[in-house]
Image 1 (tube, rainbow, N blue to C red):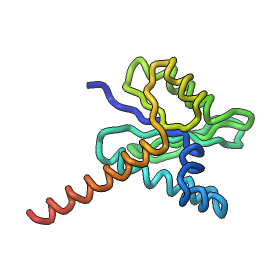
Image 2 (cartoon, rainbow, N blue to C red):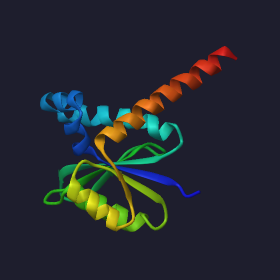
Image 3 (spheres, rainbow, N blue to C red):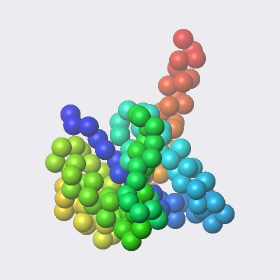
Length: 145
């Protein structure tokens, strides 16, 4: 089985989830960190390698993160997160099972043409919630031993 990569359109998710959208209105960096923490359960469960892409303001596309953690990319000034996502999908969709989480209809069509699957913000939230429940159950079972 090929490795599964989940590429998340970060701001698309933030603005679709009420609690993150409200947090973003007060502190954008905190909302981005909250999203990343939420996504950790998917990667920690071992099913996905998670990549999050945000619109940035720098002079070049940048990547942040610790080894074995969620990869976080910021687009450069004048470039959209969508263009970074498209470049990643074009590069990796033939080698890995790539899924892109976005509610942007045009972006979904574009990445599907490169061979990626897509999921909505609602589907991603459901997967995050399920991963959290699964982790809690595993921890309960370990405590019983």
